[in-house]
Image (tube, protein in one colour):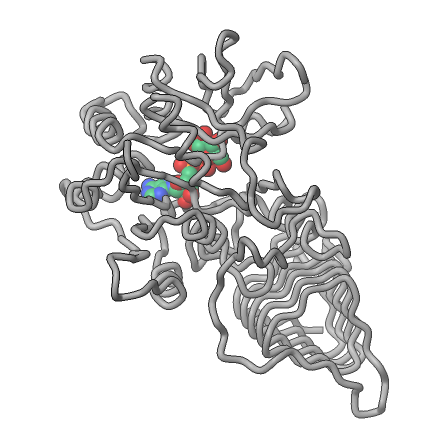
Length: 413
Ligand code: ADQ
C-alpha cells in the first residue's frame, strides 16, 4: 500500500467511576494530570507526533469540559485538511446513546465513509505513555492482519483490568487467544508473574473495521465493546496481530521511560503516576522535547516564589509547580501544583496533588491529598492528616489513605 490514508479515533466516552469524585463533573479523559495537562493530551500528542492529522474524539459522558478542552487546545492548521474534532454522541441510529466503545464507532461510521481512510487507529483516552503509532502502523501493514493490538507486559495481579493476549507459539506476532479481563489469568511461559496486556490501542484496516462493527451491531448478545467483542471476533477468525510496545522506539526516550505506560483508572494509580513525574530522575520524563506532550496554553504569568511578609523563606523540592502559582514562605515537597495555586506562609503541602485555582491558607497542612479545582483550605486547617476525620467530613479516602477533596469544596478548621 503506497502511503495509506490514516484516520484516528480516540475513544473518550468512558465514565471513570473509579476516579470519583474527580469525575463527578468531567469525563475521565478531561481529568487534569501533571499540573496543566488533561489525560487525553497524552493520547492526542502521541497521535499528532506520529503524523496523524485527521482525528476525532468520540465523547459521551459529561463531555462539556472535554469538548471545550479539545476545541480550545487541539486546533490544527485551517489550511490543510487537518483537524482534531470532538464528536459527541448524537443518537444517529435511533434514540440511544453509545452502548459501548464499538457502538460509539458504529454510530460514527459516517465519519469513516466521508474520509475513506485505508487504515484506522483506535485508541483509548486515559493512559499516560509515549508511543510512535507510525511504527505500529508499519508493523500492521507488514502483518497482513485485519487488526493489530498494542500490548505491554503487566503484573498478573492486574490481569482482571485488561484484555489478556496469548500469542501463537508458531508466530509471536499473531494472537491465538484473547481474554477480556480474565478472573483466572495464566502467566506468560517465560514469566509466570506477568501477562501480555492489551493497551486498548488498535490499528485496523478500515474496511474490515467497518464490517466488524456493523456485524457486531446486529449481534444481540454483544456488549458492543472493542475489547470484549470486536477484538475476540478478529482473534476467532485468526485475523489479529499483536504489537509489543517494546518494539517501539520513541525519539528522545530515556532508558527509564522508553516503555512507560500507566493506566490511571483508580485514585491510587492516578496518585502513583504523579510520583513517577516528580523525582530527579523521573520514571516518566515530561521534558522530552523530541516527542512533546502538548497541553492547554494558559494565559498566566510564571510561577513565583517569595518570602512571606515576616521574611520567612519557603522551600519547594521534588515538585512540579504550574504557571500562575504564587508561593510565599510555604513548604512544598513531593507535590504537583496545578495552574494558579496560591499557598500562604507557613503552609505545608507534602505528597499531594493540587488542581487549578486552589488556595491554601496560612499554616494549613495538606498531606497525601488530592485537591480538585478551586478547593480552598482555610488558614490553620488540615487535610490528609487524619483519615477518619476526613471521612467524617465527607471527603473520599482510599484504603491506602489518600484523601480526595472534590471541586470547589472549602476545607475549614
Ligand atoms: P477498559 O478501559 O476497561 O478496557 P472501556 O471502559 O471500554 O475499557 O474504555 C476504553 C476506552 O473507551 C476509554 O478511553 C473510554 O474512555 C472509552 N469508552 C468507553 N465507553 C465508551 C463509549 N460508550 N463511547 C466512547 N468511548 C468509550 C480497555 C480494553 C482492554 C484493555 C484496556 C487497557 O477493553 O482490553 O486491556 O482498555 O486499559
